[in-house]
Structures are given as C-alpha cells and as structure tokens.
Length: 343
Image (cartoon, rainbow, N blue to C red):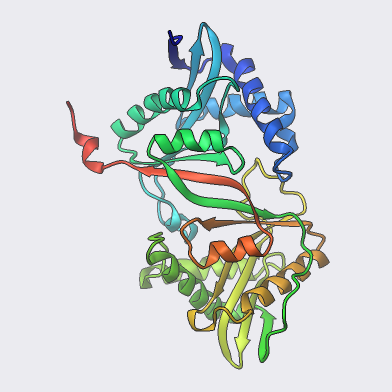
C-alpha cells in the first residue's frame, strides 16, 4: 500500500526541512554544473532566501508530507502584470506564473512524478482560478528525474540557460572581407535594426516568441539601447561586409543571470544575430571570438546566455561553441477558457 501524501501550506516550522532538501539537491548538481552559485550550499544563506521567497506578496508555497515527514516543497510565484513602459517589459509573457530554480526540491527516495504532481496540483488550482494561464518551472539540465516529472504534467523544455566556463578563443578559419567594430552611440539605429532582425527570427516558426519589433516599440528601443551604448561595460560588436551591417553580438555586464548561477567574473551574452543571407560563413564565430577577447581583457572568466530550445539556428551554434546547458525552463499554457469555467 502506498503511503498517503498530504500537501499543506509551507509554514515556518517546515523551513529547516525544506532547506535541507534544497541543499541536498544543489550539492548533487554543483559537482556536475560548476557554474552553480555555491552560496546556496550554505544553510544559513539558503534558509533566509527560502523564508524571503515564501513571504513575498505574490508567492504561494506548499510542502508534501508523508508520515509527517517533509518529502518535497514548492514555492510558486505569480508574475506581476507588466506596464509595457520599457523595452524589456514587452518581452514578458502576460498572465504567467512560475517556480524558480531555487524554489523546489523533493527527497531522493520518493517518486518524483507523484510528489511534483501533488504539489503542482495545488499551485495550478490557485493560478488558473486567478487567471494565470502560462506556467513555468526551472530545473537543472542534469536532473532527468525532475524533468520527466514535469513532462508528465504537460510541460516541455522552452528555454535553456547555458554557460561557457572559459572565455578562451575559438579555433576557426578567418572570414574574408568582414570588419568587426564595437558600436558607439552613433550606431544606435544599426543596433536597433539588428535587434529587430533577431526579433523577427524569434517571432517565426517554430519559436513563436513575442518580440517588440512594431513601430510603437521603436521609442522604447531607442531609450533602452541608448542607455546600454552609453556604458563601456555593455559592448555591442557589429560585423560589416563593406558598409552593410550583417551581424551583431552584445553583452550586458549586469544582465539576466539568475542568482543560482555565480555572477562574479561571468559576462551575460544578450544578443547574437547574423542576417539570414550571411549565415554559415563563419561570421558568428568571428563575432564570438571578438566578444571573448573583450571579456578576457576585462577579466571575465565565463559567459552565460539564454537560448530558446526550438531556435533551430541559435541553439546548435551556442552548443557547438562551448556553451553548456545549466538550466531548462519548462513551460505549459492552459486553455484560457478554463479561467471562467465554474463546474
């Protein structure tokens, strides 16, 4: 007979147990994924983090109990609705909620499919009733057991966070007639146009990721990229064939690296694009080599990026150039008609 699993709200009395579960999970991942932030292997640091996450206004937290023992936990969070007043905010998915990389763990000897199902059941019930229909969870790339559990719940891999653990050069053949220059503020329009080229690529099949490329988005893009280009620490490198801009690679010193990945000496790779007619000619490799040279000169030891799993040109390129998966975002969209359904 299978022991009954009880799911209840995560209370202060559970904090020690859930912290131990998370650290146990992270310890196994740390040896496989060296980019994991080791601060979260410290009990005091991690219990404070979990308590803060639990107490956030938009959070919902649960524990799974079996024979009064904590065997799993999850902290979900409803994402605040964006005001769309900035260029990055336009990238956010409306009506979304998620579980961060540091907000879930289960015991080693439990059935991951059953425990995560029971925990998600409570979260999803609350999220959908409140109109949050896009759900995400974030798992370690090396954790096949947890990935399978979420696949059973209707989730699929969507985005990968990958890290290149060194900033050494790539062994590539030299491309002819290509000039690479670091963008200045006077190159603002070129930077925006190349970002829009990248955006239209993401809008297409099979990615279908929203990207702000409409005329109404141009003023937001001008404000956002102007601020970036004013800072030497956010280099944007543009590849030219003659006078024609055909590619770009950009970095953000304060980018979108999540807190479970060590940030010290880690440069965030923001955008990489080569125009369709210029692809497969070594330009992407040349741009990346230029970027890695800049990173070395400025004492960066690694680089991290996000890439859509269904990005048929981007994902194979980054994997081939040394970016190793650290985390998968697994996502699911609920039929919005169910929000108003009252059985």
